[in-house]
Image 1: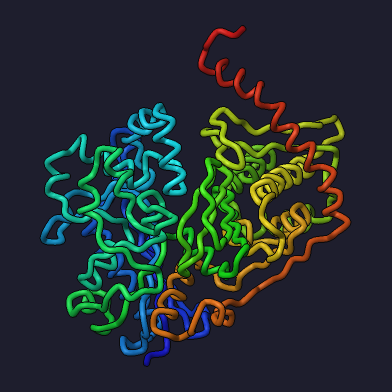
Image 2: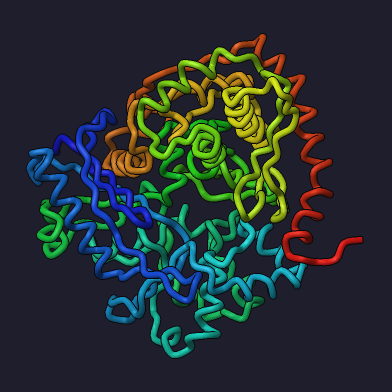
Length: 508
């Protein structure tokens, strides 16, 4: 057996290949840019053959940079962007460019489906997620109705990671964390044939390949693929995971009620559960890598963009250098909870808010400004507002495990400290930086039996920092939090007025 694992994270615009040792240590990484084709304002596609070439180049570069030999690689795991529509014909060739998760062409179709409240809610209850224009389920229906000749020619529909694994192994499968975004009955863990029929796409059942789990073997590298990648033919490839679940797994979210918070553009909170509980809340459910577990996701529309806006508009920052974050870390953590009596609602995204409530008119607000208010106090309030929003997303999750923090917010001291104090939960920051790739690598390690089970894979994870919640500061946030929620409730009337005003509509 070799010495290393390769974890691949094929994002929308960038592909990363990362080398890990058998104990989960991150050793070397390589990246390759990927091209997105955009047109008709909201359409986003990718050339599938080009994506494969970029992936192959990325893995070859990794092998060169690391100095590892092909026989040193024990197994490969995959993670990638999820949802969208990736179609192959009967010969296994792309039928068209892939339609991506952020494509908006099916927005009108989603609006029609929303009008049928009973069906729209049934989709959420059965699949665990409200459909979006980028949902695979939505795009299959759009595909049949708008490109019927190509739809008839299509023999396989799945998603990005599974296409790449097919190119590696020649085996057609759809892994369940990806399929569960919109095309899986989450209770049965099977395709929802009745739902396909109700949506007028019964043919979909015959175009979706057999399901596998993240730790199942998805095949072995073919001679052709191994040559392209610079690896050894016969190297096993695991089922892998969709990127968000892979990130949670890579951070160590394996036990029940484990929480992984991704502080990036959005504020995504992923919780591991042992039961899927159908609901109509604005959250999303996917299968976990481990059979018998699920991942419940609730993500605020904006997290770090709130801070970036404040830095740009109030401090004139144009480049987010390490020095900028060092200055923030030197000043903000020493401020008191609610410093200056400020309260900030973090709904800064132009699309409004999606969690823990849904309101497309929601807007950010700063309350409590006086002539004595400083820029530093405003920035502190902005960070607090985001962390209070994350607290509301985690409100019904038992506090039995620390928060595993990843994303841009994990780089310094400010965000982990305020998040810990706001939520009353300790925050752990992982040593590895490429967590989606690490989750993919763990799926490969479990596939080949490097660890007997998830429960025995704890040594795969290494923590760089532990940030403890300060009970006294948490008690202060316990006083602030009810007013934060009340301010959100009262702001709804203003948000509605603001939306109408900006659209030039008459007001009562």
